Length: 235
Image (cartoon, rainbow, N blue to C red; front, side, top):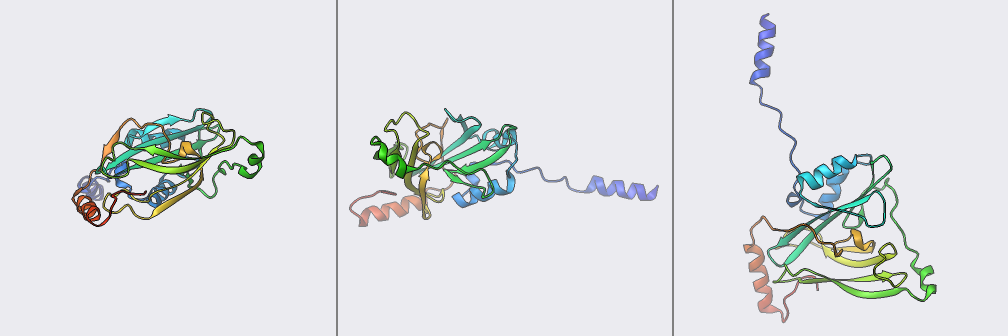
């Protein structure tokens, strides 16, 4: 009886187990960090409901279904970095017929080496059709009124019709980390499906303000404006 009472006292006095930490996009600093988070917490075979729980219910990302591909969706989350740059998270996911994750993408970059292979466009073969279109394009971000109000990229469209998106591919660069004072290195996006990319024209439900301190960024870009003829980010 005494042993039972001692065990009971230990259980009652022990601190409660910590609750699972709620996911927040703002806590993920870099593109690499997001890839590692998905690998660790949402491995291949994770249910669609669990992925949506993380990115939509907890993270408040905007869910968008692919307009033509079955079992494909994405979660958008945009952060206004002190009006200098809008950092976009475009997390897309492919599911099998059992609603299980078979591949995930961070801004168009595949996460899992063992996941389903991504789409590949045969641009060389398509060039013989005569209607392939190559164009320099821009993604407008009016919220970044102090800096990168537009970011540019190159788009290839195999049939020349911009309204059909499954035959498109782009090349561009973006910031590697969501920090207005230090955008990190440039991430190269090559042969990326526009719908999965940071340049995608779909609107998120909101553009959220950066939760950190903007003073370091303000000081940095004020100094740049005094020494450079033009002030911009990621020209």
